[in-house]
Image (cartoon, rainbow, N blue to C red; front, side, top):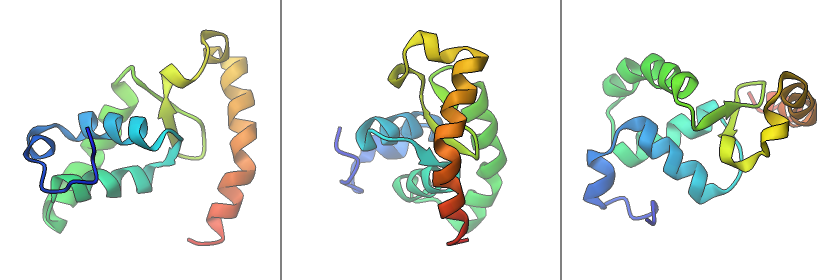
Length: 110
């Protein structure tokens, strides 16, 4: 599915978390939470009020859904991208270290 076609009616019927999964699959790389949420909001064509109302539930769903993994510093990816051996606490700590430098450079723009 090409998510760039905003007029696609299928995306309007999907949940925010389903869209997040598709966005990450299409982008093929980890994303900061804020970027992922903005992309999903854009696809769903949510108003500012709807955006505010859905933010905390989206974050909760992202944490609870087994398809997603937090890489630290509020950067998210898909578990399927990482071998099972990296899903240990030690492996996740190593992944977080890899992305610390990326996060620090991101803070310059906030």
